Image (cartoon, rainbow, N blue to C red; front, side, top):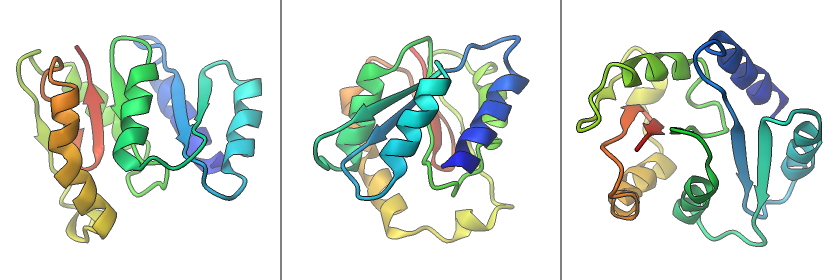
Length: 153
């Protein structure tokens, strides 16, 4: 988790002249030290907020909860497992700035090995994307990079 936060902060610092970043994490009652680590970081960094769900409601509900609590003009969705490097957000943000509000763009990263090997969780996520699109139907199509997505009204 420390590596993820260090890298996310570095990304935020690179675009700080244009964007104010906040980081919203959801812990869905998993065992381990993640919640304690996030809460400790949140106590030191006002940009970090942590939602602690009292049980695991499933992946899609976790995402939905994050969007319901997101602040600002856009929300970026990225997995915390570092399957997609946080630095990819810089490209995502750059592309987002070039997209009209009525369309979306998918950026394929075929040079990355993780693109070729889709695991079960990724397949479920993509299958469930239409459910998220129904919930967020007032938003335009997202700009995406593999499994990173940026949503903005």
